[in-house]
Image: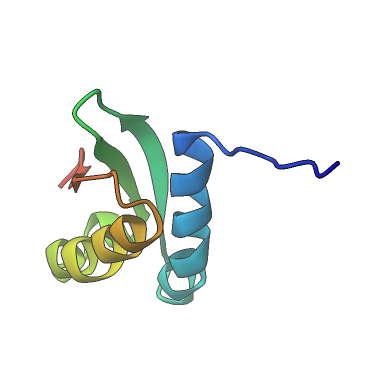
Length: 83
């Protein structure tokens, strides 16, 4: 009998964030998962340098959103609440 662990949507998004977090931390930033809406939009808070970096919108779309959507296909978008 095999045991399968089923991760929640929240846990799967956190795992996806963990894959890109080292790159954000290297530049003095980070992200915090705030919410996943009923419409499958991930709401994040940009922390540290990410909160004031002029490249944050590009990092959010090209880095964070793509990483999440690749790992969790049912997510349709990502939104930063503090940008």
